[in-house]
Amino acid sequence: HGDGDLIQLHIPHFFKGLEVVGSRAHATIKGGNLVAVGFEEWATIPSDFNVTPKLRRTKAYKTLANYVGRPMIRGETTCKAELQILTLSSQMTTYGNGYSHVLAWKVCPTFEGQNQEMMEGYVDANIGKVYSFKDTVDYFQAKGGVYPNSNDGVGEDGVEQAGE
Image (tube, rainbow, N blue to C red; front, side, top):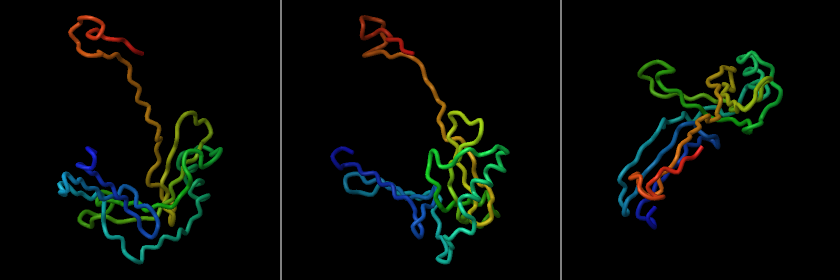
């Protein structure tokens, strides 16, 4: 920004070639000075963490179909199935133990009766536990108008131009 006067960095976390979901480092540099740095869900992953899944991606799809209770009609419509590493916070584990990590399949199936929804699920790639299943569509819709220059009600540039 500002011809390089303000630089913002975003560095995603990868381990053995896999993305660590939700984990990143970020920094802001202003006028050559580091003014802010932060880490989100960043933790040391043990070097012996195994990134080879015990379950195939087809099993992840079947696990989600059982979880939802609907037949799947096709897979990989909104994302490509891929292995990722999930960071589990102490809220999901025992208090005081910090973060832990699991290998998971990220899959985006389509189920019978599904319309505009774009489903995304995370399934443990070793034991088949479903960690997350959600619709990723943003359904927000806004309507309104604009005041071109002011809201004083005088002239065309002070009167609301209604929109839909």
